[in-house]
Length: 118
Image 1 (cartoon, rainbow, N blue to C red):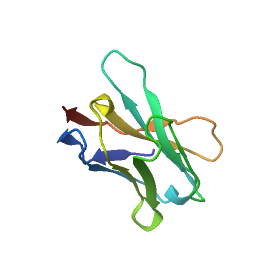
Image 2: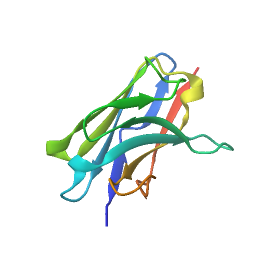
Image 3: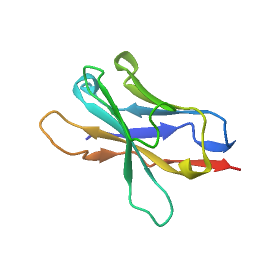
Image 4: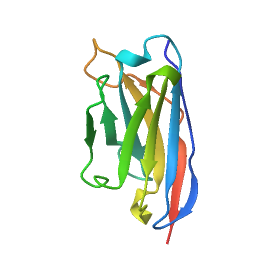
């Protein structure tokens, strides 16, 4: 069973920065595609960014140029650096694991709250 633990959320003013961290259990982290997702109140969960096992990245248009996803395979960790935060970035942020044999994110952390004030 894969377990994920997110941290790094908090309250920040618009224009500020936060870095989210997600630590993943197990020995196979390096082959996973990792993703960050978010869910705002009353809205569906949406993809924010993803990074493949080879390091290629994809971003949602709303965060392109402001957020950066990265990974450290030696530490079983994926990061989301969030700069120039906007009020509309307020949400619970989750990281997810997509295993090589799957075509969906099947494992999730508990989430970390990010609140951006105006």
